[in-house]
Amino acid sequence: MKSLAAFLIVLMLWVVGLLSFAARVERSTPAPDPMRADAIVVLTGRASERITAAVTLLENEKGGRLLISGVNPEVTPRELQGVSKAAKGLFDCCVQMGFHAADTKGNAAETAAWAENEHYNSLIVVTADYHMPRALLELKASMPRLTLTPYPVPTSEVDARRWWRTTPGARRMAVEYCKYLAVLGSQAFLSLGPKPHDPLKTKT
Image (tube, helix red, strand yellow):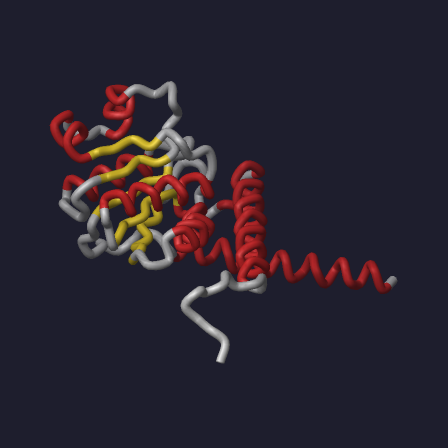
């Protein structure tokens, strides 16, 4: 009985957390017009809405350049230009394709390397609304000194306002919440570990 009670308590807490997470996602859109940043990064996915939104920000001069992170290596620049609906001149001058990221953690590493190489101090982050909480966790861990402005985008993948009404929507939101908890737990665990030795500090 005790084990069943404990399971029910954990399940209740998980459901409450899921509902809170989903409400946070729902409230995040429409995103306010962001202040200008050094550059923009968009994390790719199955839907094209996020890429189109990132290109619109670039066209509106919200950032000097755009990184599309996690592009399939088989996709050509011209194909991606068509998906993004960007003018050829803008795409050729100001859009960079990143091919090395296979997941969100990879997106963070790819973006951090790009930002460091370009000496950027601020980025607008564009991704799906339901994906933004986890994406920010990973990106902030990889770029703690950069100013990151989230720009969540509603997509056809999950309707954040009616996610519970369809099995695919409920599954996607629940899976994303579990992934978010996993990243949050992993980062909390790592923060408790031994701190790196500072050679400038000497014993007194």
